[in-house]
Image (cartoon, rainbow, N blue to C red):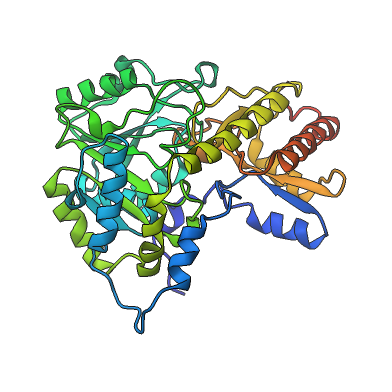
Length: 404
């Protein structure tokens, strides 16, 4: 019997999706599963998206250009200009979601065996993309006690080698919700200029900010025009995850030329998502203010309830719609599976993402979970109450397993 590749064997399972079979089994038993595991917004996709599809006059659904429709790139660039980022349509390559943009960016800028520095916990797919490209992740540890703030510059200097080619951050962060300040980005600029590195920044949660500090885009870092590669998407901003439309954005023409070759190999990004998505960029401040106010309220409810549970700690995230919380358990993978397999509270249970899958360092994050607060406050409250009951029951039946 032929064997699969070592790369296939070693490719990590998604901590966000690997427990899906257990969730499906729980639903078959009649339980309501609160999905806190995945960043799937429950907000309605704006009507402008559907209107474009309903009034579409098209006889043949053709391939689009490998870098996306020109009209769509113009719309995307116009949105950037409206928020103070000076770019034009030629700086955009449209991709199948931000995931494809990330992989194209990595493979365009790093060779086999090259290294990329990423603060951890990190979006789990970064690890998978790097492994698929034979790229080595060099993690920089952040601490839940500091809310996952950027580590000192010395921590970066310690791991930089001749093989280091890039630093990657997500701002605001997935999975922690941490918002990097302008000062922290200036620190990263200094490191990248000193060591001639690319700075990759995943900015898909740009609008989701809950404090007074404004968002500062990496594309506005002076002197970094050839170093910055930004990844973006309409998935979260417009609750259009299934459209699978993202973008790679850079002023570096060599990176764009290289990424286009990968784009040509996969032919083209989805046409319908771009056609329907063009109308979304005409939404005004009232739309953004409304969704941000809703998510801020959800965050406040979730953080308050979590921190009232004995042994649980959750820092207050500054952006996105995720948080990483520490639980009074030794193995959150086992606990999250047990919640789906062996526990119910008033006919419900909770699905979470074990945080170990968001760390590259072996054994890190074992007592942590990532929670996506994408449910309405009523369901979110019920979900946290269910988690509280589950932790209490787990402590009763697993003496010696808890972290204490």
